[in-house]
Length: 462
Image 1 (cartoon, helix red, strand yellow):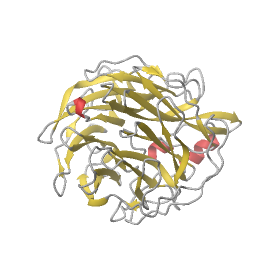
Image 2 (cartoon, one colour; image 1 turned 90 degrees about the vertical axis):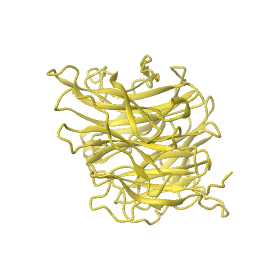
Image 3 (cartoon, helix red, strand yellow; image 1 turned 60 degrees about the vertical axis):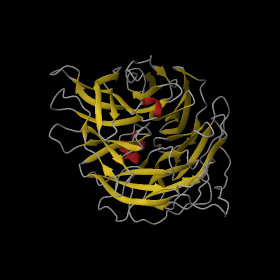
Image 4 (cartoon, one colour; image 1 turned 120 degrees about the vertical axis):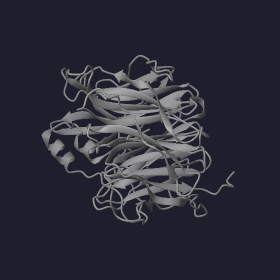
């Protein structure tokens, strides 16, 4: 549900001053090479903050797993080809109705610009079966493109229905000026593994000429989707006036009112969304001006219930660091959300419970020698564990690591590539949350193809 964070996404991040912009343009978001474990550090960096959102936390060591714990998952299929198209942004979700997966991605190879496509993948056989591609864009003009997008759905209550929320640069009427708006498209999975479009593209947000970075989630109890997005509609009244908005979207395409997720903090970007137990949790990053060219990055989260936002959760302020989009996963056994996020070169987690203070706050979970890039999280109900995936910051490595419900690493991180791609992968590996005993990880390589790796646990697990 988190969109993939790519090289161009990091470089486009708005910052408070020219010096910060120049610094951000040099940052890397590469990943993927040899299948060797990434080395996790054992000490914290001084980059946390207290639950009030104002004071930094004290340093603490990474919690080490008990010696008797062993890794649950083994690799069933490693690094197999999904699509050889020219691929950019992508997403993956589990289809619980048909025990398969749906992948969406942007294809840059076609004659009509960057087009959004979807396909199904069945992992019931070896090698996994990849279905036919389905085009998701409406043909409004020859010169438009789609890019940032999010995928949600696939739970039993959806009957195989998925919502794709995506940003598309297109004219509303052929021949008129184009705008970046947020659109939606429903797709449904079939028993034979194929996909079908349900209806046409529809507008989710058109509040300014630049709406960006959608996130999306489905909640089985609420029986609806939610879509979050950043809007530039306040740029005329204040600097870096990105605001984060959200609205519910019913399975029939009915839109709820827009919900403003934060006040006037600057640069509200990089949202993630996850539903569970009748609630939605949205997470994002923002920053606070502290004088001159300095700023203080903040990670924030807020619940939505019955179409209304909860009380504001104080921001986790982490200092003058370049942020990336946080990742969310919902633990169906314990009714809580894990949020993973990057601070400097490390990855941390906070675990939220509805109506209570975080059960675990700002816990350091990974500090690889090559630094960590943007994280992704998935949860397996069968094994009651999470899979954390991330790219390295200094190299073209990429890793996956199983975490217990408290965010403690169960085993050392595992590299995801058999052979180093010539140009790296430049994207976070994405994993799908499932109710089964497997994880499916999708990774874009060299802007040209999508590959997948399947992790599977023993079938006799309780």
